Image (tube, rainbow, N blue to C red; front, side, top):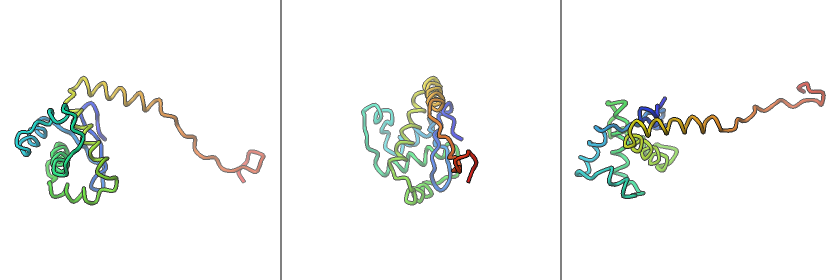
Length: 138
C-alpha cells in the first residue's frame, strides 16, 4: 500500500499494484538523462505535456525507488500493455513528483486531506434481496 507521508503513489501497472516514489536520486537521474533539464523548472513552467520518452524515464525512475530490479525495458512492455491509458500514468507521475517536491509538510497535509475526503465519501448500501411483501426474502 502506498503511503502519502512517504511520497508514495500507488499505480496498477505491469499486472499488479506498484509504488511510484520519487526521491532526489530519481529526480537527479532523470535530469541527467535529459541533459540537466530541471524537472522543477518543467513543473513550475506549467508544462502540461509529457513526451513518451520522458514518461518512460519517469516511470522507470519512480518505480525503481521501491524495486531497484525493474528495468526500463520492462517499463516499456508494461506501458504497451497498460489498459487504463497513458493519461492515468501521467497523472500518477505528476502526483508522485509533487509529493517529492512538496516535502514532508506538504505530504502530511495531503494525507490529512485524503483521509478527510475518504471519511466524507458516501457509502452505498448493499442491495437487499427482493421480498414477498411481508419482509421475508422470496
